[in-house]
Image 1: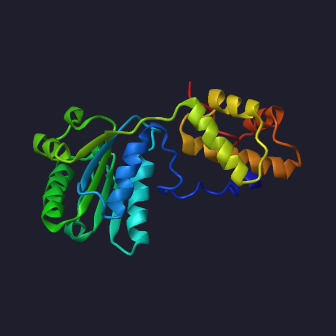
Image 2 (image 1 turned 60 degrees about the vertical axis):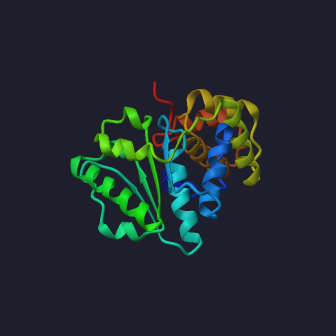
Length: 232
């Protein structure tokens, strides 16, 4: 069984199409228009709690621009993050977890914002809090409030259940409601983790030649490297 777990395929790459909007339909529409040049605003700040999907959206936007043959970069911030001057020449830059920037990185992002504004580029930034509550330089916080600011809202359990059902159907997998209910209670709460758990369960079912049932799910969760459980 260890080989099965080690062979687990990574989750699908984030795209705008595989983002489940839930209460974020307006935001998703804005982002799609940014890619198609139908949105006049070129700067967007996204905030929300971990697992809400803001990283998914930033990575998806960078991918969407690249698929159109345009230049785009996604990066996740850390205290040592620096911003290369060549980023100002990109069509779009997506800066994730902005709260992680050190002092030099904050200056770099401030300068990048100004350069993209002058050069016609687009900047998407994400963080866990609204701009005014971030522990960042005041001038940088001011820049982040100049564009559109959206809270990325987490999916409800009903919306997660619907997304899991659609994913299972796409795999040709029969998914009993009791399995979904158990996953939502005992598994990780963010949708990418739930999807990965579902994929692993499907492969475990094929490996053991047992149908996807609640007993099978419980058995899989007992594996040494099994399905990730919800943190207490």
